[in-house]
Amino acid sequence: MKFDDKWLSAALPWEVLDYHQRQAAHLRSLAANATTVRLKDRLLREAREHEDIAESGAEPASASEA
Image 1 (cartoon, rainbow, N blue to C red):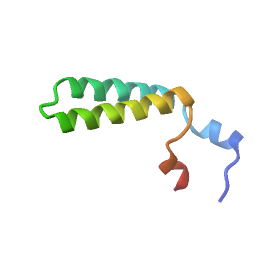
Image 2 (image 1 turned 120 degrees about the horizontal axis):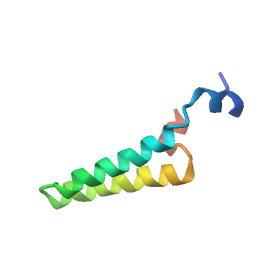
Image 3 (image 1 turned 135 degrees about the horizontal axis):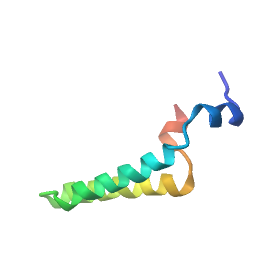
Image 4 (image 1 turned 60 degrees about the vertical axis):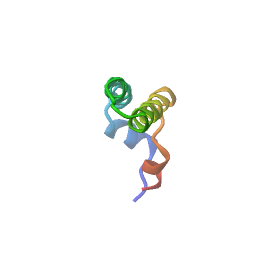
């Protein structure tokens, strides 16, 4: 089943970008308290991914492939 942009924009709430901004802030907060370098790096990488999504207004590649 294909969805057009008009249907999709009506189906998705405008808060989606806010979600990604909130997730980025949350992940950065967790990274500040991370006990290992590996965990901190992973949390900061995921925070950057959420920021990129919020800035571009696009879905991550894995979501669009589903």
